[in-house]
Length: 93
Image 1 (cartoon, one colour):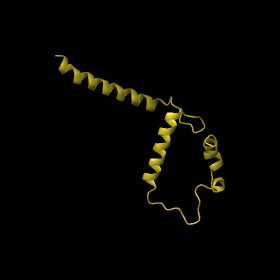
Image 2: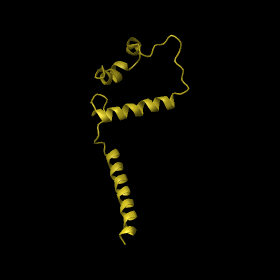
Image 3: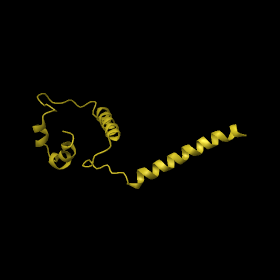
Image 4: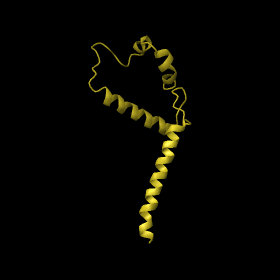
């Protein structure tokens, strides 16, 4: 009898975990603000997700000749950088 109940318990645990996960995601309690720091492990995970996402979605984009993507002066010239990116990247220096 215990053997038959084990798959039911595992299934129930999976459903419960999924429900809690959905509630957490849609609750809005976790701050994703770029101006607030994340614990180290979360920062690493978020960075890996971001890099993988950019690689996946921008695979066919080529950087024009003469553009150095590591040039901070270039980033300063772009529209919206000072509002959107500078606060988040300032803590990475």
